Image (cartoon, rainbow, N blue to C red; front, side, top):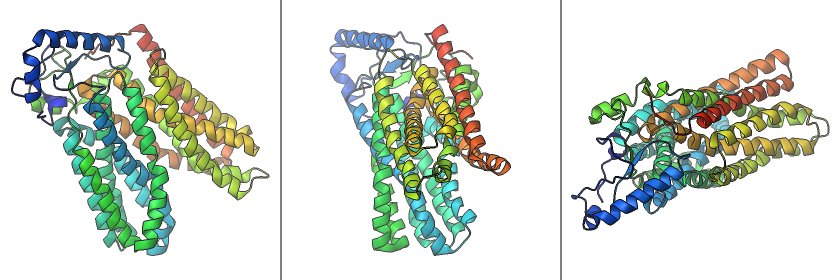
Amino acid sequence: MAYDESDAISQPKTPLSESSITLDESEPDALMFISDAQNEETHGRRNGENLRENGKYSGSRERFSSGSRVDTGYAWVICLAVCMLNILTDGFCFSLNILFPIFLEQFGESTAATTMIGSVLTGVMLLSGPIVGFLLSRFGARLVCFTGAAVAAAGAVISALAGSVLFLVLSLGLLTGFGFGCMLIANMVSVMTWFVRRRPLAMGITSIVGGSGMFIFPYLIAVLREEYGLEGFFLILGGIILHGCVFGLLLRPSPVTSTDPNPKLTETNDTQNATSSFDVVIFKNWKFDLLLASNFLQALGFFPIMMFVVSRAEEFPGFTPEQAAFLPTVVGMANIGGRLLAMITLDCKAFNKACLMAIMEFIGGTAIALSIFCETYAWQVVFSVAYGIVGGFGMVGLGIVMAELISIDQMAIASGFVTFSIGIAAMSGGPLSGMILDLTNSYTMVFLFFGSILICASALMFLIFVAQRRSPQRKHKN
């Protein structure tokens, strides 16, 4: 079946009844359905009824192409491709710290300058969100992901020629960072648009499998660096990342498109669609604005704490350096457990997704604030487990809650702005925590402040839950 890359975002849309199905006689996969139109219409009506029963997953009206269905068939190929892509992006980004002492020794520059490599890579990957969202709405996930993987691989290969930290900031930071940003958001949008009823399950699987890259890449980096040196490592890394092009080609457009009858949201001109998706229309959805604010506060309250888990533990009496150094491992293992917990609970119809997110964020904020009293190693382990579970739960739950608040054709640009808000929080959290630590010379105020920030994030998320209870059938208004 032939697909146009822009089908999922910019194809002409007309008001359709919830039971209608559009067949294109020019497509081979559609021909088999034409001779049995009545049966197909009945199947479509049942599919629409199933979606309405699971309206908690997606409040927008949706149209299905006849050749394929969400939640089944090719959707699981998408899931597999995204798993592999997440292993590449998550694995390298979370393992970059292993290369930090090597960069210090190789180039002999200051610690502050050398840390810019990882900071720029992470910052560009997240802050490029709105740009990548626009590209996705214009060209589709397949082309954006393919190009992003090629750019990221090129940045890694060029890094083999690096003679200074500045060179790596430009090659590894800018090029690879932007390429990873394209891959990251294309992955997110692909899963959310190919899955509706099983969206929590699919996002949980891709997050958990992708998280395995955090355990694979440290070993891989150490072996390749030892065998082939830094230059050879970067060349091989470029080849590994280039596999993302293959998996990116599997990201076909989703068979689901929005059929919202609101003419302001369903332009029939492709260029108008791509342009309108980049303007401020989406910010007129106040629930999405609440989600952005909650997401920013959640990232601001959560990420800086990880920098102080070990150093604060070392100040407690009776803690050995080995015990303190093991706490990040506990956080990482609990993070995977949190993703699994989110996959199970968010896939249950009995629970409201925004309410669960609010509860978990409240638990996380409370755990961070109360951890100032955890002066024994056992209690520090308990805190690390709680902290990790909340972080993993949020990685899966955020996209699921977002998909309930917006239409399918706004998914790309919404994902871009959500990622951008995380980037702003991640970039500002470090300096802010450092300033608090310098002023108070104590970790107590740092943990109390950022724990309170996370509790505020849970309050905003709870408001989304209240709004959903008041208006269970979401309506798009401008």
